[in-house]
Image (cartoon, rainbow, N blue to C red):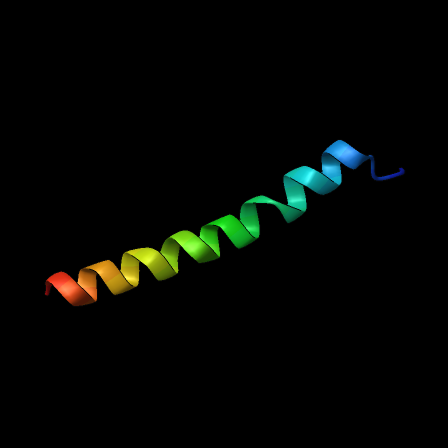
Length: 33
């Protein structure tokens, strides 16, 4: 089973996005709180 480009995009793109979103949410909550 060979990983296609679409599969790599689905695997590699959401993870950094989730990390960035969690960091942004953390700092905004910390700043408002």
